[in-house]
Amino acid sequence: MTAPIVQLGRYELLHPIASGGMATVYEGKLVGPAGFARRVAIKRMHPQFASDPEFVAMFLDEARLAARIRHPNVVATLDVVTREGELLIVMDYVQGETLAMLARQARERGEGIPAPVALAVLRGALAGLHAAHEACEDGVPLGIVHRDVSPQNLLVGVDGVTRILDFGIAKASGRAAATREGELKGKLRYMSPEQVSRRKVDRRSDVYAAAAVLWEVLTGRRLIDADDAGATVLAIVQGRFAPPSSLVQGLPAGLDAVVARGLAGDPDQRFGTALEMARALEPLGPAPLEDVGAWVQRSAGDAQARGSLAHISPGGRTSLATATLPAGDGPLVELVALDAPVAGAEPVDDERTHRAMADARVVDEAAPISGDSAGATPPRHELRDGAAHADADHPAG
Image 1 (tube, rainbow, N blue to C red):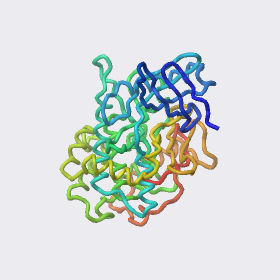
Image 2: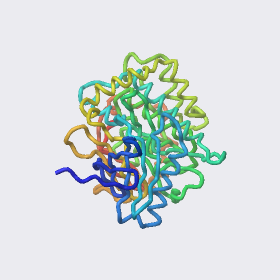
Image 3: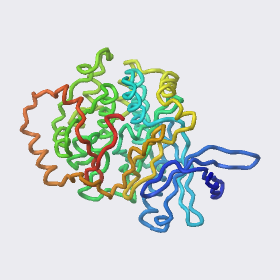
């Protein structure tokens, strides 16, 4: 039997899409006078948290921050509703799939993501990141750093446009939900060397993460193929990554140099802004938006006819966790409450992290990364608030 439609002010909550530890996401509708209606995505905080000041502050903090970023390459936050004990964030409904899901679907078909599509997707993501980095409030720069750039947080629409989503753990001036000392937030294998070593991060850390994503979608492999979080930290600090052209034939000349600069261990050696890296990709032949959209349509198939909401994350305790929704009857790929450790996952403590950093300084820098190891798939982990969590997704998928 169809669940009844919930009406909250001018919004109708039609049916739930996903549920996490902090909120449930609904496909919804904005209803106005004279028959006006608009399809939206609505994140609804669970009732037990809606009266908790700490949770409410974090929830509204994300909405306030995201609403300051107005750009075609960022999922738009449209409204916040607080009434009758309810707390909602209303977002633009985007018909599309996450890059993680698209890469997985391509892999299941035995295909890779075409290089021109990968370049276009990352160029759009970089443009959205630049908009976030440049965002201001009353003329004062917010200093936003996303800190969780990953395939799960890049939505590619059937219109061919890439959109950044989930600013739940973004760093910004004046945030209520600041990172406490000793915490690491984000997906470990996309973190920059300065992020894993708990040094100050700025926009160039997001540039590093975008370059890591680009490396993975170009090669179809994991950039860092370690079997535990400590080894992953060590690999990040060492920073010896094979050029994509050594693993995939036919890539544009000059692409290796762009990726290598984005992945430079020293932030001063990277692109200074995300826009600078996006411009470096431009002459390498990114696909037109209509070609990217057609590829998304072919890759996603029937999921798009139903309208995917893979881009909305229902959220965990400390910040909003990633949710990736399959096209068919499979389970949710990832719904992690960030303060809840996964059984069997090994935490990374400060001592081991700093020991890995010290060890990295004496490792032979001439040792190449193995092409075989780059393609293996050992157990994967994701670091959230200082704890390693199982990462259900493969590289870029």
